[in-house]
Length: 191
Image 1 (cartoon, rainbow, N blue to C red):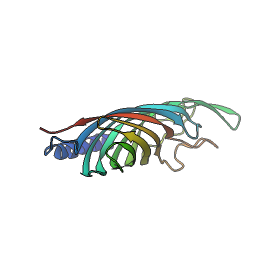
Image 2: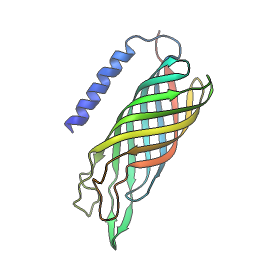
Image 3: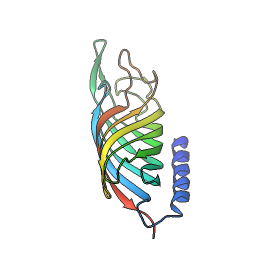
């Protein structure tokens, strides 16, 4: 838990530094959004819903860099592993990531990804009827392709926190990944 607090504090300090010198056009913006999807593969989770928060600076009109965080809630599902019913717990992912976006045109399709670390939070065990410990987190990636205009972003995205073989129960691998859709609203900063 201390590492989560330290990461959130570092993210806040970094954000404050970035937000201190803003212009009134759309080169600096705060983005707030929501996403949902289906876990892939659906072994320990069935789907997810979450919120996205990010800051973006357009380095050039077609290339943006920034920071991203939020919360993604994964809904645990029951699974049968080696003839035993496993009641998987819900869990959450809190990413601390760099945001990278490529905008070929001022309005239209874009490509992007978030890269960083995903902290996994929730019950200490993978399942309610198991003593296998859940992973604490791992490398986080969220590539997306979408449509954007001045105010809105609509995207197809894949979200994954890599945990290695931690949290595995028998043949059931621990999955913190989902494919889904997202929507975001751009808030210009400055003036």
